[in-house]
Length: 96
Image (cartoon, rainbow, N blue to C red; front, side, top):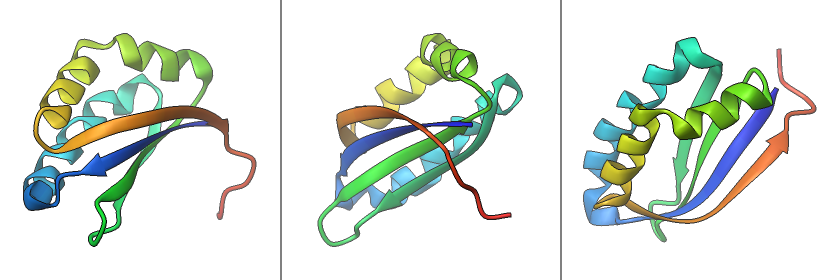
């Protein structure tokens, strides 16, 4: 399993909107190799991470070309958060 971790800064005045909007997009990728997704944010500073977990590298890379994914980041980046970095990591342990 692989993880894509994006470091973001959230616009805290739009936090409620982000909490409502963000879950709509990962669900569109569930049948395309997405295993799980989390959005974590420090509510005091706005620093956060968008973390998605993938069956394999092919699925993770393909998601970035997916029109729904591109649409999501245009919408979410257009008023909810600013992306700073993106890392691709191997998941080596998982709680069962």
